[in-house]
Image 1 (cartoon, rainbow, N blue to C red):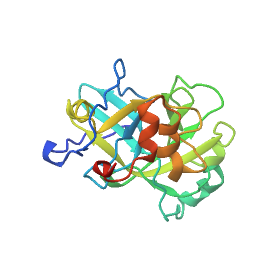
Image 2 (cartoon, rainbow, N blue to C red; image 1 turned 30 degrees about the vertical axis):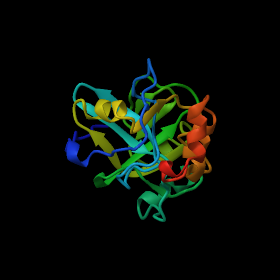
Image 3 (cartoon, rainbow, N blue to C red; image 1 turned 45 degrees about the horizontal axis):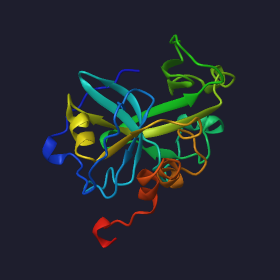
Length: 210
């Protein structure tokens, strides 16, 4: 799948009043998670979890994985409904290209080579072509998640936001991307972290109140 790189202005970049978000030795590489530190000024990203799809010299791209919407797939895409992970809704993937739909699927074994129906992302995760007949991939996919829009950064922009403390870069667990309870994912991921990071899961919106 090809994505169009969109550079957001730094004036519009999310800001956090939390500092110290950088964990030594971590990088927002494909397949890792960006976890927003509370609170971010930008409501598009406050308390979000982003699954990274791309990260290189041209910028970075990912989808928010903890914001299901009330939208369901309409015809003819509703034929994918049986493959959708619970909850079977379209997720708000981010503010860039909100008319675009991105489908990610989990496969039983890691995929390295693209096919006409899907392209590898990382490990067991592939991007699926929603225009194909889902019957062709029903045996290859364990679960599918559909996102409307995505989150994008220009060259160096995401690195600057991480350095400022807006994001934590954390490892992904197998159940994160297709969680049955995505609304709890932000807190669940923080709770499993060591020390002060776990405390962030209980932080109020106004950290100065503590």
